[in-house]
Image (cartoon, rainbow, N blue to C red; front, side):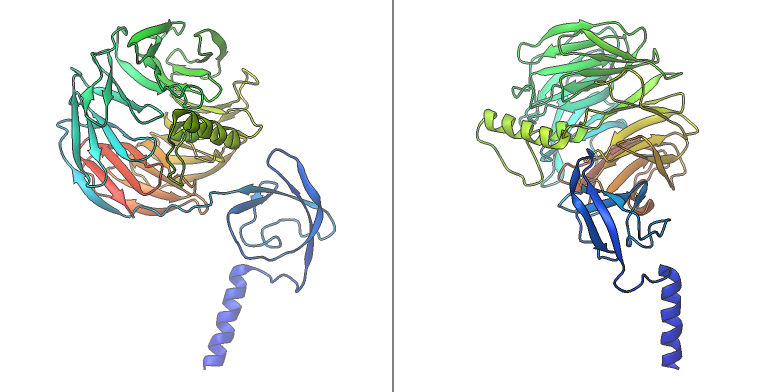
Length: 471
């Protein structure tokens, strides 16, 4: 009996993995870097190999997941095939699986959640006009920052983690010291309508971390000097509300607006380019360098620097190593259901138009290694795109309500999404499948953030509770 069973099992296993590769089969391969430089001569490779990460290999469009024989359509053993290899994160982030704390305190919905650049502190902005800073070691409330008179719509940590900025429905920006919970002076006044988005100048360009740009419903951008507490300049060329602003690693400022354009400015406030193409409001922007700019001098090793100069040099080294010789890429998501993929430094024409969503695109996000783009839409889906070309890769379906935000794990192997259906979901990027379903919130989840260290996720929404999730 057992012999027949073993034979059947072996046959079944064989059927699963496809025809075996002939013993000792060799394939001629040529390695190239992502930039297209040829690495060494063509090689004779064994067709089957185990997967000792952290490199990923692609032949044309196809990633080699099992082996060179079964993952390719053409089985030619004569032609030289070009394999593009790409290093992956040397560390692995574990999927968070349980809620370790449900923290109450906010009296209205939580609208934004953000970890500090080194992952040591967590801040939330809420409809109750307060910002709260939470202690992550004990998972308890640390400071309540009061001063705004209306909803806090956006919060942003300075790249050195020493200042927290918040923008509110009361038309002001406020600055806080997250260590003490004290306000740094009075509100920064100037905008005539509410603040939609905030962005700090990247650390490797300005290690004093004292320049901040805010965008507003009044159609203007304002750059603030946070030490002198005054407006450095006002940029007002958009003809409608500005929805999102980013400060890029090359010193350019990108602003998206309801006038259907994205404008690119240099840090002196002069217009460099206008990116046109969208047929409706532009809601969201993402830069390929977002993660490395967000974390500045802090990396997964947790090293601390003694002087500002050292930290600035480290941030610059990290940025340059990350950027390589490819330009900064930008993706914009809009109410016209589409996204555009741009390389603003090289051209004002989009590289490609990314279509597929059936309702408006609410949030886009590059993975930390910039290989993928994830987009969240009101059509209940998250879509995955190639971060180099903007080509569609796959759908992540499972939410039964609009998806509000997405956030990547720092090793770029997983993605978490928050939705109107009150759940968070973690997705396995390689398999394009759900990895974890995280119910627990009592209502819509508006905001989610994965800590830069990868060990914690924080989420908040309509049920006024902040939840912290760990492995």
